[in-house]
Image (tube, rainbow, N blue to C red; front, side, top):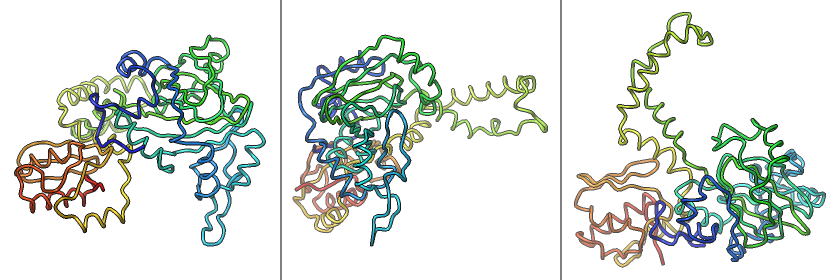
Length: 412
């Protein structure tokens, strides 16, 4: 799909990628299900435009994939990379390239094929991930799971990110249970609670116990236990992981900013044993008081740059073809059509100078270009020569700078 230009979630637009994942009212999904309840949707629109079994075969046989873009598993056990990789041969002698013949043999013996990071390797899913991240406001990754008939790749487990499952081909029976560890963080994997996970999957009544068919979608919040088994034929689904931004992320960055306080950088006493509760009790109240004071003195303006650097770069924006982009930059002339690069997170701060904040840098402009800059970054297409308050020559200078910084792209 073609990404809609934009930098973040916009409740005024149609949120087209999110609508492919959820049937019904998106506001109801946000208020009732997001982060708290599983939801099975029957959108009825196939996902053939995003991914097919034929696409999987092309990736596995013709695209020179390397690990870790592929995993293979059966009944919860992951196969070693050496069992399905090898050299690429003359001119591409890289030892960990995927061997299609070995993959074929493993798949025929009941193993599940997991194509990882398709948001980086398959064009339709690159665009879809860019749009979904803009729709949802959270970083997105996409894997595909292709399972032989009557086979199961992984036993009951939970993920540390929210998941949308889009059924691409065949039928797969899904079972989802309530969490044993609510809202796990990325450093709290299901293996830390493996006994409780197994017991809950065995003894508790599921909240979803149904078959997904092509066009169906399932939302599984992080922490919810889930497992799936292919039925009569080959089954394939996309697992779209949303790496949820949490309050704990803010806590982490607040703590990191505390390093700016010299009192908190002071050394502990000589010979101090941090494993001794009695010794720790002597210093803990003072440290806690200093930390609380540091947090209370931190403003949103102090914290925002750190969170911007950490989160805005989690998903790449719309891909730019380097050669074509360079040619468009060279040929830029009045009448050229440009727009904001899809999925590019940014913030425009008025003033003199005007500041454009990006994930990895800040760009300043003279206040005279403020109106033109705001207009050209609104996500719509604009022709050079029609921007406000600037001569055509000054518009060319502004647009050329934004193209050079990969903020704008040209359109036919």
